[in-house]
Length: 305
Length: 293
Image (cartoon, rainbow over all chains, first blue to last red; front, top):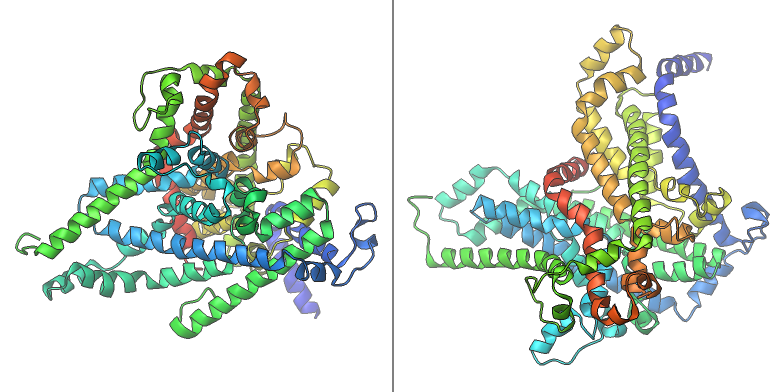
């Protein structure tokens, strides 16, 4: 015991400057991450700001039950899952397709230009992208409706129709992220041994055969890792953009858990209710991540841990 | 492949691929080009919808009106402040977290790593964070923008990975010369780490420039709000009060649309201008970050 304590003490003495350097970041994490985690406690309490977290009376699972019995429960789950699922389906496959096609280009200058341009939308803020969407889809003078007008189609008020919400959300997501998210795949393709391609050409392999038997297997581990991470985020689809684009007319398809928490938890100051919904959401996310990771480890031997 | 004659199928697929890539390029760039053209065309052509690709007639009037608006300058100034101050704080704290984590026998290396990585998967969520900001007394102050996002765990991992690439022999010999860990960090490690400092600065600066959620949550005072909230009010909530200072009643129908495009350009321009010069650093950052632990 004493010897162990002495060892620890000597190591502390050795590392004390490092500990001092690490102290501010640790404090940051305690205050801005772990205290809010502790604050989740209010999900089980009738939180009143004056009485504080500890002083507020216990409510048990009242707020969870309120959420599960809410008429919005299934609509929120459905909207959150569908919006994520569509985003995942398109948002995940496009970067792979783009990276594979890009690597087939022969003209290095053109390749570089396309690649550089494709990253640009990633750096445009959500506020601007949402502003662009609102401006472009305007039924009066929006670009999209003007283009439709050329085809003889009457103006559509895209953002006021629930049926259009997911299409707008997902397609603008693709515009923003297909280039940026292809970076990792492009790097993985560049890392494939060129001798494999040469050997395949000697054997008379066509382009499609090379893609199928060399390129895709080469980037498969990368695809699996990113897929696991994406599945872990399935229930946390970026609610900021939804918040800027939805309105009561489109709640039917657009209202998701994140926006509901914002409206009820923050704007209506139903703190305990909002915290309970967030907690429920977070638990599902972690469960999905664990399931995806476990499945992948069993089937493909690629996993996060 | 000089002695390998390409078959017809191969040439057709070449053409399809090149065409698809041209399409990707067009889809990416057209919205930008259209917005710029709309913002500098003659307003008459904007109103009668005859601008499609390139500007028609030239007019800087929309920009004159945008820049004449004090609200815009104020929010622009706020965004610059949050970006500069926030990024400085971010980079300093990220290095302070990443450097100890990169030292192999640091006494709390493993628990500290777990402590930080856990926050990537589990968060308190919107409401507890909101309550915390109010309890700390920083609601509706500039600190509410700077502090809650002071470190990104992802960037700590990037920086740590980079620091680990520095040969340990350098640490050892500096130690023998009597340098302590702080001196080693400032004198030896950081000068070798300029690329990662650039990456961190860029990542954080862009995220500050583009951020709006913390401001929406924690800043009700419009004199503290960043450009992104101003954009939201003008472009999305269609708040005409914001435009009042920019034009007299008679000019409203002529300029109302064009001014929106000019505001988008003003908000996006800094990023679009510096982006081509800096994009290789961004790419480097992503690739360092994606290395498996």
